[in-house]
Image (cartoon, rainbow, N blue to C red; front, top):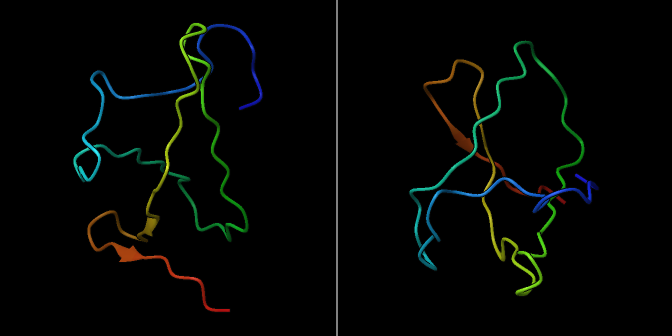
Length: 74
């Protein structure tokens, strides 16, 4: 994040459909961590316009098999 060289973002090979659930980014932290913040960053797309995720879901797992949807408990 916060890098100005190139397009400045990871994105799938092809544009995602508006309600597609096929694209995902999985991160293995290797050990148990208490995650307190998740940030996203769009990209400028070579001057064509801003591209960014309008919505995303967060799921977590301790074993990589059973996934739980994160929800705000406030």
